[in-house]
Amino acid sequence: MRRPRSRPRAMQYRRSLERALAAALLIVATGCRAEDGPEQRPALGLMGTIPIYWGEQAGFGDALSGNATAHWARAQLEARYTLRPLDTLSAQSLTGLDDLLLAQPRALSGAENVALDAWVRQGGHLLLFADPLLTGESRFALGDRRRPQGVILLSPILAHWGLELQFDDSQQRGPSVVDGAARIPVDQPGRFVAADEGGSCTTEADGMLARCHVGRGQGLAVAEAALLDLYEPHPESAAALDWLLAQGLEDGKTRD
Image (cartoon, rainbow, N blue to C red; front, top):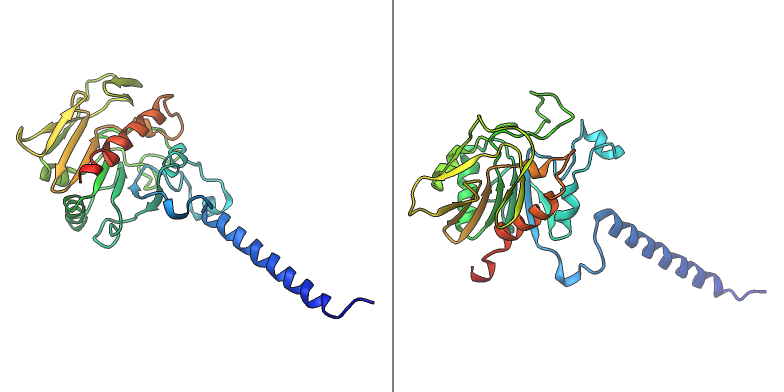
């Protein structure tokens, strides 16, 4: 005959197993890893009409069912950052962020332009993809609000930083690579022009890139977003994205 104390011990053991299982499920559900610990990846704010975070989905049901087309760049970004998707730009939404990626964003409101400018001036680091004529494919038809924005509308903030975005509509369509400090896939890229040679921005790669030092912060603007194509990414897109992240978000932080 078993001793009566064995049952309470068995129940205690079972409860311990249940708690351990619940903790493990929570870790999986939130995407946390044990090795994150004290050296957690830095937060990266993410906003734009290119569906990097959620993928291209017809509705919330696609996300729940797993039918949304995942964007290849999300996993690449999450290897370096903890992503924080943003719907709007404000002092509140940008609080706690040192880094921000805007991927073909919609037109910003006046209040959002003010908040973005203030955030950069206070030490923020921005990587901006601003394509004057987006060429990537989408499952949604032209005019559908779920489709990535075909034309960038950011003139107010660019002009405030001393930049003008131009586009040559006579250039030949089709994928190619701009070869400079890095190889960047393009398809009919735009061109930045610095309004003032003594201003805060300089251009390179025939104007496709603009580096701006605004207050205590900095921004790297790319007049192209073909490398973020969802369905037919260029073989060199991943390497180009890594280079742009390092240049736009990490360069100069030791000097800030």
